[in-house]
Image (tube, rainbow, N blue to C red; front, side, top):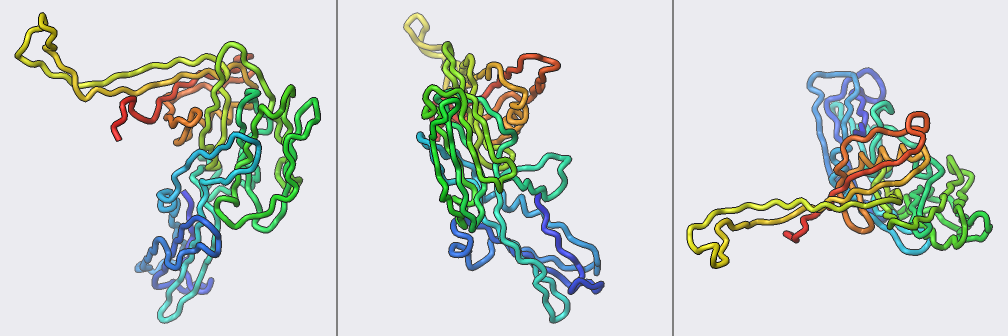
Length: 348
């Protein structure tokens, strides 16, 4: 939830208002030039009880309908648009007799993210890099995604180097700010195969960021085919985890049937006829051994409502998972079951 707090007193005093108006506007594009002329929602409430307290209006459920998270990646290292952010303007007008007071007029960004239960209402992350943790494992041919925020008017820079070679993979010292929803949160897409012969990729970010370095440890896998699983994390943007080890596929078929009373099986006729046959396919992936720092990402994967294996949309089937630690398990590995988010036989 996200609450807009509306005081039920006029001009900050003790006189109760008669009513208030809450205007909520939701849009994509430029912050100023694409602002709609009319609000998306208008909420009016009478203060019939003449209360002098504060109303809390949850606007998250209204904004949620306008955000449909998608996956956006490219095959080379570079900065790509974030497509999962909207602008939100909320404006509250207090009414007392023939007088009005514009109490709030706020424009901010919104995503389809969440806070944990112990973080309180209207949680603001304050993070510029929208990942938890700064050390990650990836296959040497993986695409690794780093969502990050860009100030509207501040120039920033990103440097990517391979270790131990020290070769520069990417440099951008002139990343300007953005007032467009596709730029206020951008995705730094890293093609790990560009770090030829290196063991690690170091991503150096501006010192103004809460953390300014991310390490991506590159691994090879000789027996199995690694899979990059992309999901929408708690900050509302794309993140991925590489599953290095075995894959198992299962097909689950459902159908209806009826019995018919003509023809003979000896003539090749079916006495019991299936119809409306379709199937869902599940895929089970194993991470292989990873560091304990992966636990937060695994938790967010389990909570995610939008997941992809490669470009295929999937839903998570695993509903319970014990988070492993070095003290309890020594070697940390996860096996998670997914279900393709479509019927095996196309029905749409």
